[in-house]
Image (tube, rainbow over the protein chains, first blue to last red):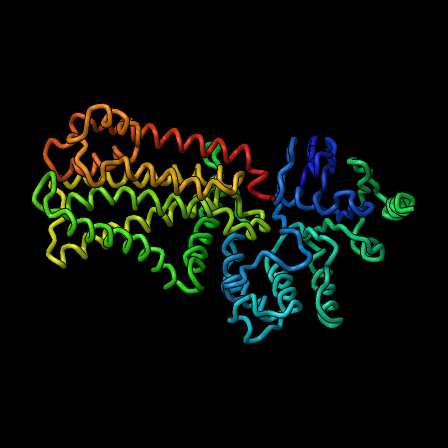
Length: 217
Length: 268
């Protein structure tokens, strides 16, 4: 599904070099959902962006053979001056989906009513998140990338998100970064612990969580 | 993948199709968000350079009733100013394409080169529209600015736009590394404009000045466009080869630069 080979990723900050991925090779196989665990600052979010392709590795290759979502999380990326509808149409077009069908799904799922024809910048943060989240659900991704947040809004909307995700799991996989171990146990069958630029892969999530707890101490 | 594999002779047409869809979506979005948030806002992008062109042409034509060549001041002036307008606006707006669309890189399908290509296409259309509207306007007012040789004129205008878009690509690359570049570019552009022979006849100038002007690509744009109005004009100085090679070199340097700093363009 997604294959990283010899991926090197580093940052330069104030003269020091911070290595996030140190020549890492991993194969994310279709049919499994993965959690990426690590202490704060280990580079989990960067890793998700490298997997998504919104950041490039400094060396090595990332090969994607599935439809991979953009990193879902806190809202962003939609144009503040364009209306919700125009934004949805744009994203539907770049992902080669029928804009009308995507629109129908989003209107039904995000429940923002007449605001859909208002500029995105006038939305409350909850509405903005619901729209962005509904949009990612409207497009049929084979792999969802999740950075910390997988459910937004009030309790009722969070339940709908969880319900929608459960439906998706029949044919879509998830790669998620999370500090919420209950969520990791619920959704992921495999886990990677990121430490010192290297991945430690586990086929048993509980073993990975144990290592993560040790690192956190 | 949702679509059936479309590989023909080892070339994956689906990949190209997907890119065309992304670029199409970017074009629509760009036109809609250029000024305010309606397609009408795009008209401003056309009106701006058009007004600039009309203003300079009108003022300079009135100021110089006696022109060094031909009988119509508007022809001499507009053929000198047109290359400047066709270079300044597209190259400048293209140079800002990455900065104005940075938020979109959240979506992996939107890559820097797609954004640049989309902008390039829009700028090409805008420039063409400016030229067409200018000529329609002039004929309505009864000013005869039509060239003697239409094919030379068309090729020279298209070459000027090609040069401009290549310059826009370089602007994007350099401007995303050095922020002050966009100001510096305006200075370069003005230098090129004032040494392009827009308001003077180069053959009236000393040979040493002409030799120095020859290295200015904009000078060749002016000479080329004028050669479509006046028989035998530019025979001594005009080098289409120089202009087109210059533009092509910029294009390849820009593409090379984009590849090398792609990571930086995506994430800053």
